[in-house]
Length: 134
Image 1 (cartoon, rainbow, N blue to C red):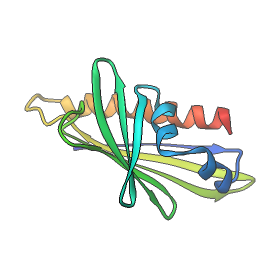
Image 2 (image 1 turned 90 degrees about the vertical axis):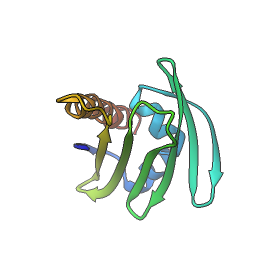
Image 3 (image 1 turned 30 degrees about the horizontal axis):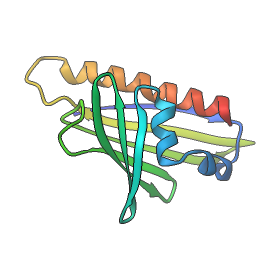
Image 4 (image 1 turned 180 degrees about the vertical axis):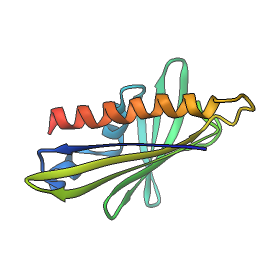
């Protein structure tokens, strides 16, 4: 499993970011998939996403300092993928951090490295898009 991280200062309060970042918005801000549907499942929201010929579910849970989401089931592009997005007060705004662990589950050398590289790009796009909207 490969771990990647991206972080950025955003000129908005943590409270404003919590209002902005819904489970479906997290997916949309990443830019690779479109949220098709969502429903509550206990303490989580399951978001069905689609794009590039794929459709799969992400299970999103709100945490004390942000959100955690993971690929649910076996229909997604990864063998396993989990992401944490955290928000903390910083100066006159917030420090937004996204950390993701990803595995393709393939016996090919560097497969997880390539998956991590793509995932880091999605995390950076998420942070850039949130900063632009905040």
